[in-house]
Image 1 (spheres, rainbow, N blue to C red):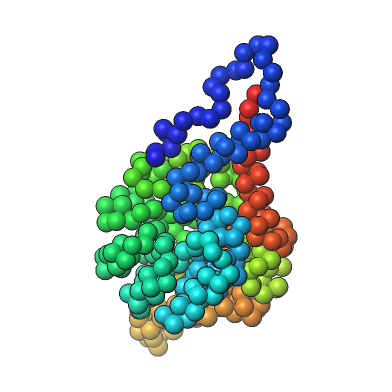
Image 2 (cartoon, rainbow, N blue to C red):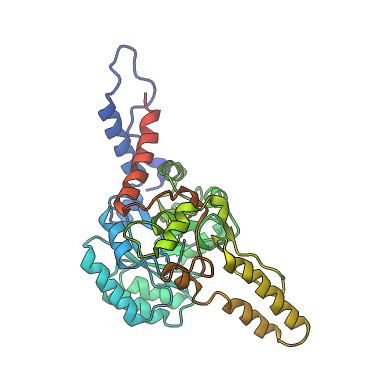
Length: 365
Ligand SMILES: Cc1cc2nc3c(=O)[nH]c(=O)nc-3n(C[C@H](O)[C@H](O)[C@H](O)COP(=O)(O)O)c2cc1C
């Protein structure tokens, strides 16, 4: 249902003089009901209590965090990353052993075994498959749909949103440049205005820089069906991220999470937002040395590009699992400033829901 035709639950207009204002508990209950109505399309689509998706984070979004998010009423998503089909099958089975609630799987479109990974998901009766990292190939889209799963895709612009809906996407994620990990150039504030008023065919989930319930509420009121958060869950108690990784998130401010910098336009660097560390500084030096070697004729252009791309190979694992927060890749969104403690996943979700509901309740007469 398009959000503009959701019927208002609160009585419109001022309370007639002489009538008794609603009690605090009644106001809170009405706010919860309004919130439930605002994200009903998202909760119906995902099959969960709250339309809060745990954004897939490679190495972080494995069985424990994913199950914790789904058990708390949100929607956890396994990050397949570079896992092979056997590893993914084991991760799905491990997650199913920890929760009976629905959860999804995020697959990267350029994975060389994408079709096999889709089959693994379908065999395990995964209901929602997220295809990330580029426009999903037609074969994968058909396989997901023919297999009976719902397809969730990312869109970086309105024109692509329309194309994805035409080609069968059942829901879209719009992720602003505030997000952690690989990012596009446009903020969620702008993407939301560009896309939400024009796409009503499928539910849309917003992502990037979201750290509080009031922000979720604002995007629901603009027409989103739910939100996807990554960074806030990375330091959750159930996250297997190394204590060093979690401590760095708790210490960091929004301004510490910056996109990777490209030194030379001849050698493109896909922007990745993360915490500044020795690795990000060495990456700049590495680009400079590689460019100089290319200029001196020591490397071909292709070899130089590969040298630059290989710099970060294995770096996210180094940070998340090994705890090497100086040389690893510390992918984090600007919302990292709102990570202030290691909290149980259920407490994070309850806090987000409470903030959204409290903002609604405060408006009522
Ligand atoms: C450590 C980290 C790893 C991530 N890995 C992936 C990934 O493998 N696939 C993906 O689609 N998005 C990935 N993301 C993006 C998240 O799914 C999510 O969209 C993003 O974190 C939302 O923005 P936020 O961090 O401001 O909440 C990653 C984000 C982080 C912080």
